[in-house]
Picture 1 (cartoon, rainbow, N blue to C red):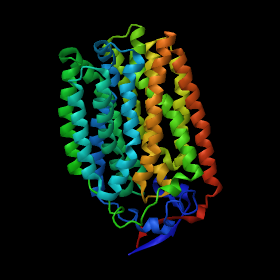
Picture 2: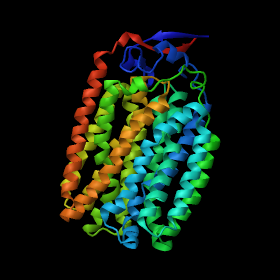
Picture 3: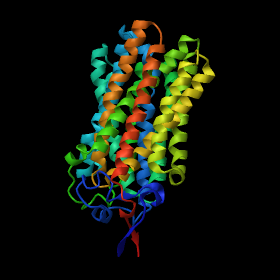
Length: 441
């Protein structure tokens, strides 16, 4: 038997409460008690850690491959006789489809469970890598790599992360942090491995090797993942009221502005370092520093949720990410400053990714969380598509990187302002005494 107890949202264990009075609570359909009745708060089970393991394996695989793109940039650009902006568009398309297709992937997971969606993503990613290894023009690469990898990552990320959130309540922030720390691990080890393989086997054979890695990793994730009990029998979820919520819209705009800047270093930090004499391996290692910071952000920042407050910590990640571009701008190509920049950027990005599902659950509830996250992530898709391509265009036209770095700095600063507006709006309707969760009797 379970009973409903009420306590302040910020005091909810794990820093994540479901607030009946918070904006979006009514917009998602059910009341707070109804959401709680469908929630996992009363029965965190060891099986949930299998889902954490599945998500860790998946994210380390898909993002280790995806975020190695800067290591392939120069080789592919030279072979296809393409400039920076055209080559960067391959990565931009991947990010676009990754985030935009997160919405249908999340909805499919809500309806049929995560396993079939992950298996579909496995097929898409493996096929995309293999086909890309044979393309003879960059235009075809836009389809095989941009669309193929984007579909694969979308299907193997949002469904799994939303399931982790649904399996946990008291330890949700920690569980999600561990699960998505795979992104940091993948980003840490992927680029140097790719650089070594490209040097010995060429970029085409490296993609075939990555395809084999993706096949094994994603099949393992599909075997481990289990649908959370919270999703089974949940009230019917309607997304349209959430999309009309002013808090959701402000969060969406903030995410769009932030990702316009975020993915520029993923593509151009390595080439920038090479302009100042860094070797291929050293340039690839900068992405590893980003991955190391990302890992730290995912694992460590969640420990401060109770002390700082979930939404306050979420805002801090945005602010730190934007401020970090000052280091890149003033680095003068000095490698150690670029490494510090990459680590700080990665830490704030890792915290943002780890806290996003918990922040969304805090503001909008657990019911339909896969769909809500998918909808929010489309902002990142649009930002990821436009940001690197526009930065590449600036670099090609000006002959230097400064204009692209300044633009990234200004855009990320604007995202902080917009996110603060969203959080402030959520507190206008916040009733601390209305937060509800289930506890065992």
